[in-house]
Image (cartoon, rainbow, N blue to C red):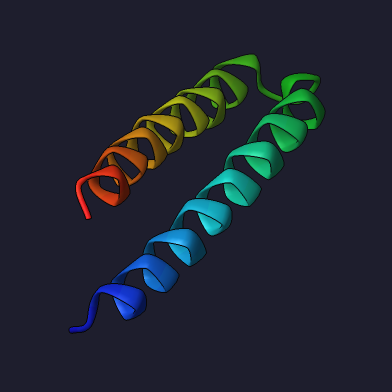
Length: 63
């Protein structure tokens, strides 16, 4: 792959992950009324998504 293709891909993945993380957190608030434990798991998934995003940002910085 060419560098510009990788940069574009990384940018896409980073924005995609940020969108999912935000959605997970919003939905966790809604889920909490029905199942606090499920809401905790969804919030944990958002935290993991943030970690993935951080790693992608680090990878992008290595290009």
